[in-house]
Image (cartoon, rainbow, N blue to C red):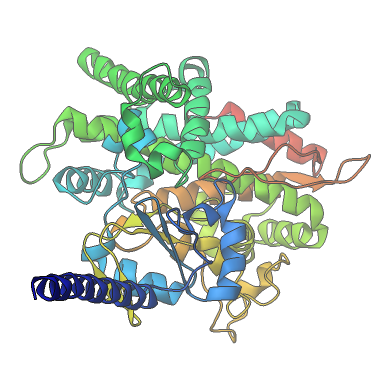
Length: 506
């Protein structure tokens, strides 16, 4: 009898455990069914490793064909949701901005290198709102008119450099983009910017671009690794990166403050913010330093990438180049260089720039977001903390939006009958509350540099071999070095370039 009771007790315990296991299994299965679709998962690591660390946008576009608008990855304690259409991006990042305006924690570049203090990587908190307010104040459409002459002068200086040494066009375009941002943001003259800041800024931004791609470091997926000793390779890399970033944002700000104390500070965004009395509590210098510091990456790298891509495409598409030059000659004339005020009267040039931005977006995956709380969308559950990636590349290559997307066709943006075609500026500068505050400034910079180059130069493939165009695979994707011929359109154009550059205000 004693044996019988013990047997029944053991049986009940086993039955109870079996029921719990079945319930847990059902919950797991039911939970997995409510997640968006994604590649097959392996035990423990899930499918998170199916996201490439480099040029992920290409693989993610292929996943779109298999799994649709939403592609879900998980593993190692992380979850990633890729948004492959503008509808999905608008529904979540814009219509549900209170949930999807946060940033994921980039353990290496954000925490260990300190870039998490800058506006692009800050979480959606009070400090971000302070920096955002500063940027909006300094970069409103009205405020940036003050910088038109600087942007036009930099474009003229770029032209004279291409005239004098066309083979070094890569260096000239990068230098022009850097000079432009440093001059507008900190009031640095051309000589100061070139001698003291640009090389360091370029190296720093290249390092940041490589480090900011989700999953660039294993430590981003397994944050506990940040406690490994300082001699571990990624820790040494992070220490160097922290020093480079701090120098990038501090040195030019110290220059502005010094100039303000001596009464010799020229107009700049930093001077404007340091001397302005904004409504509410005055911002501290920390907020101003990081707000202005973030503009370099937002402006210089993307402008550089877009202008170089345009040069390559003009060399490969001579009919497009001729059409753009004809419009500029007709509207601007042949007696001067283009001005930013000409922009509204050059629709073909505008369409050409739109197509350059679409054909290869400078930020193919934008910058990732993070779900602030658990959410549900289209019947799928999205866990709290999910990294949300807007796949801009998939939008740019969407055949239902852009016919024959692999081809370069500026005319697609002039066809009023095609209402499906989407202006790339809708998705090129971010989404919702995280739209780039320097959008209007950046559009003017890209326009004046490209319009000036089109007006003054002809572009063609190299005399030997062919123009091969490849792109870098980091956060900002820009052309790798290529060869092409750049020649002034005429002797009178060459004289115009030299004269205009001599009148530079920078």
